Amino acid sequence: MSIQKKRFIVNLILVITGGLYIYPAQAADTMYFSALENSGPQEVAKLVLREAYERIGVSAQFKPMPGERALIESNLGRTDGEVARISGIEKKYDNLIRIPIAISRLEGVAFSIDPDLSVNGWNSLKDYRIGAFTGSKFVERNTRGMDVDYSPGVKNLFSMLERDRVDMIIIPYLSGLKYIKDQSLVGFTRLTPPLIEIKLYHYLNKKHLEILPRITKALEAMENENRIRALRNGFISELIK
Image (cartoon, helix red, strand yellow):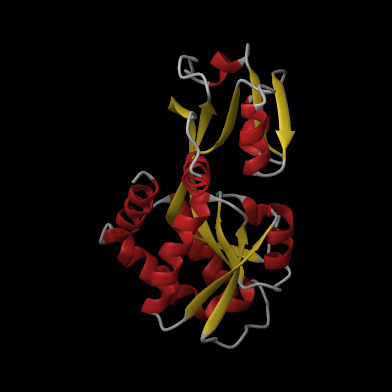
């Protein structure tokens, strides 16, 4: 058993035995989750969650909103949880409980108009002008001291590339792929290899402890069936047609 799953079980035991006290919500036929706007990895996570919750008789619905607001809403219980986030957000948003099965992943990659640009780790980017999402923590952490222009929205970033304001943009691979497909864009190249890969996890607000074992079991079953991988691969296949 992984350390993450052990921590999850300990947290659950504490809640059941009174180590934490909350007022549980009644089980619902429909649950609403905070979702990041225009995010490819979140679209994969939504596919996974729709099926997982359907397996336990619940309809999963999603409310798109900006990143920080999404966390505030889910932590306060105004939504029922987060679609998918990196591990560790529960340290700051302590009303959220992470389910320890990765349901999506973020591949941080560079897109450029120039296919000959060389990318081999973060240090290889120091001589380039870089564009990235405002609030993109994985970019901020790894590009300190570099020439980075932050902008909200994937549309703005691709526009920066077209106007030669930056040499490359660093965004989640699936977000870039989805935008290129949706807008029928040509002339943009994904540079390889990826700069970073991060697992993403589903979070529930603590008011839904009664459903926690059931949705955990459903996601574990999907993982063992390779269903999560199949949904991701299917999503990518649709984008590259």
